[in-house]
Image 1 (cartoon, rainbow, N blue to C red):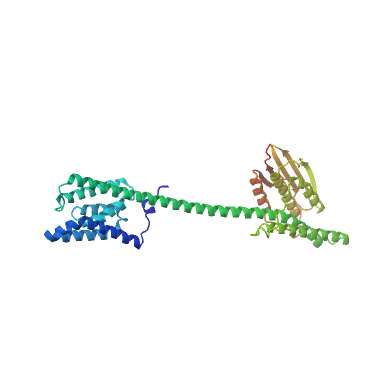
Image 2: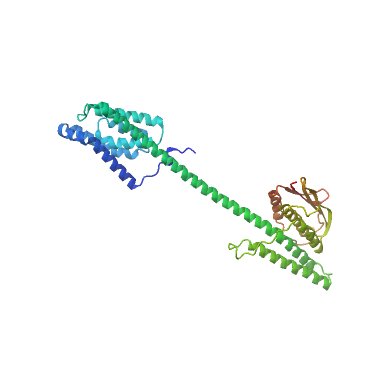
Length: 387
């Protein structure tokens, strides 16, 4: 990234101004002391003019960053009649050279060279060895320009490094935020998948106790036992999930093994025992399914059955898992919509289907759900299964 000159001109503090003015004064005195003695003894008006122009340039040099080319040309031109301007003219040329723009450096350098030659030509204190003096003037101007360009290059390099460091810190902060958001979403999916399944069991059986007045004592005890067991399992699983969130790994319980494809028959049997009618239309062999694929398969079926339990518990659910390596797994869970009202039910959040869509997308698959013209709710998912 190419920075503008103003981007890498560092702000100057009080000490930076002090040593620059001290150096300018030293350069001015070195170049003017001999001429100043001659002026004092032979031409007091020129002496006063020389000092006045030098003092004015010491004031003007403060605006060298705002008007770099103008200040450099003006001080260079005035140095042709004032030896005391040598210090400000040198600093102005160095400051201009830090911008590293040849269209500005060349005119300013040529003006400085011409002014130095003119002053040396008519100065009463100069000797006749101009074949030696003038090459020294050219070399001095070249060194001044080179030093300024080196300072500008170093400033730009440091500014670029600082910019890259700030960008890297910003990118790192963004990645941390994204990682936290992704981890929160993952934990939210896990908590929803685990708890929604258990809580829906409690809700369904508690609703039966509330609205069914023809249950026998044995049936009521059996229903209460299901509620107790489901509540206990929900608490256990909630503790396991929340243990992952603890800051101190020593305080957290180890993450339990995630469900896989071979756990699917157990899920179907558990759901049947809760009172849901399930018909397995097709079921591929589950032993060879990869762990990541099997875990996603389990969660899709689990969430679909949870939705059935929450919204249509008295219907027949048809479950189909088909496919194989290289063609992928196709999961279909279908149930008729319930007719009539059952009274208050579980709240509808839609987070389960959103989580399933995210989960299937993470493994490269896709999920859809729709209501058919036969008033059936269908959840379909396709998961890639590498050969």
